Image (cartoon, rainbow over all chains, first blue to last red; front, top):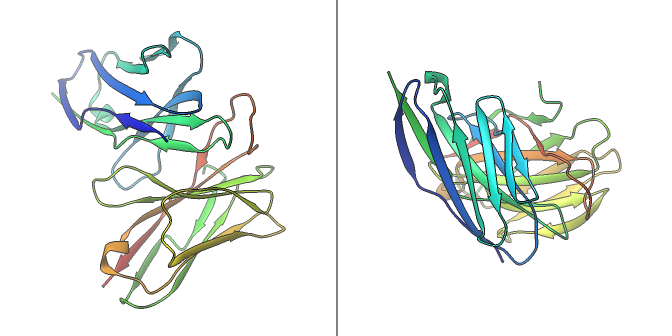
Length: 110
Length: 116
């Protein structure tokens, strides 16, 4: 099975940098995803890692270490609109289903 | 518009009733996934269909069932509803269903079910 852990809540200041960590244990790994979800809305795709290393996409970057079962999402130049939940998800090797962590609720303050 | 259509957007019903949630995947996508998200909870995987056949099952209750039709739309049936079934139900689709290079999920906007 899969087990995914991420912090429940984080706070940060507008313009700052925040790192959201995710650790996972899985029996069949085929990629790690980060999604953003505003309250009551659908999750939207942010990033994908399948190999070790850093993937950068504008203000957002994601890092993966498969040997450590560890990923992080880095958000730079935080804006108020970045206040949302950030979901870490692992894709199952055989079925493509995504198993989500409980999400990290990020609050950005002025 | 993500291309994944879920209806209805909102549903209010009484305990003990049965409801059907509908999902039309993005054009060309063969896989449909259903997720449940209760208040302040993560997305719980319910079930996956690929090209009309059940492919993976999560912690789906026996009172819940789903199917995918030949035109690839899917329905999630929830019966003998309880207060605890109140949640957002999301459908997502992807092009493939098996071992494949990266294909992202596209989520629908969800159906908010309230059981009173």
